Length: 166
Image 1 (cartoon, rainbow, N blue to C red):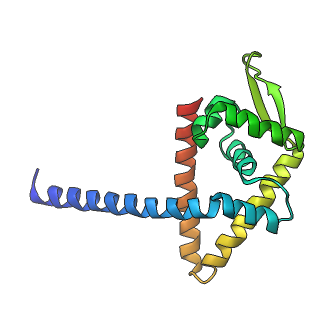
Image 2: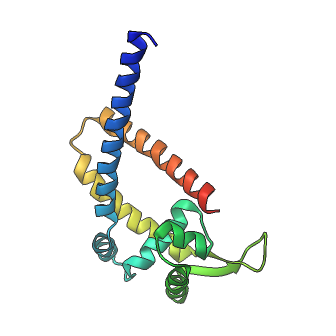
């Protein structure tokens, strides 16, 4: 490898390291936005009476499309029994419905109801308003570029989660 290739490789590795650190910082910020207290506040501000853990489940189903208790448990870091308990509460509140897998009728799957989709949309809108408040002073090109890059990152993360958990 000649010197130019070596320097270019080192620069690329440095950029990847910087990106990894920035991504970790962004992930921490997202966790703060999505923590139970924040979910409770967002739900309250949106006029909703839904517990944070149920909101997390609804959000996970909406974002990933994952509908099986075991896979949702892996995604959320909780046992499948906890997912079923939370799903039962959401079903009782009319936010989820329980159905059977089209591919194998032995497996239970969860689907958002119209009310569940409304709740998710309201919380996502409240979260978006919070982010808007944080970045509204940024130059428009920066906001556009951030949105494009975050969407690309989120798409990759969801694609990997689906591939690993389904």
